[in-house]
Length: 277
Image (cartoon, rainbow, N blue to C red; front, side, top):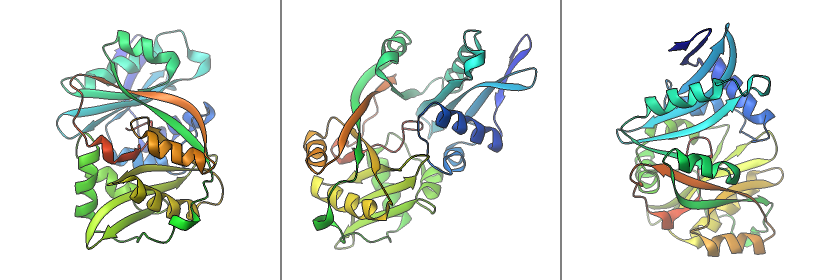
């Protein structure tokens, strides 16, 4: 699609990496190697606006299954703002996800804007940063669990199936840990190294104790502080991490346009990413 000298098209792999680099420049602290893993979720789900062949704005509009989509990485290069380029990729992304429930994670200053576009707040998340003292909880997890069990737990905690993304997300260079009890998968988590420090997400588990055990083994793999985006629907877990030395930071709101998906929120202790849900 085009508008004068501007046209919007699907991004190539290297262009997705450029968009993730813009996110780093904005201070969003993406993970090392995120672009390839993100693209595994939906290779056609990354769009860019180009003016005279210059890449000026981008967005992710990733389809999951048949009913859900997620908007993220919505960025216009600073020197091209105020000219409608960001709006062009927004419109293209929303058109790509038409007919689905659409999710996004909105910072406070943009939530009214998104509400005006039909998005409704479902819950908030808070980013916790630091290196919690979890030594007593460490050593319970194992790195092996069948992919079918991992995918089944993930589907309970996420609005749609995302097997292609998950198969990439749990592999190196990211660190994967699962907690098994009697042959049953109780929970899993993933740590990835980022531009600054490390992030943990997702963290899905059947209880707060299980989540802390998985978190402990992931933190042990980090060479410094970690960050995790915890839903406020987990107040006891959040308070436990604060008591263990983590510091609350900025908040976002998970917002949906369309019927809110049904997930087991009680098992979600850390969301996967702010970019892809």
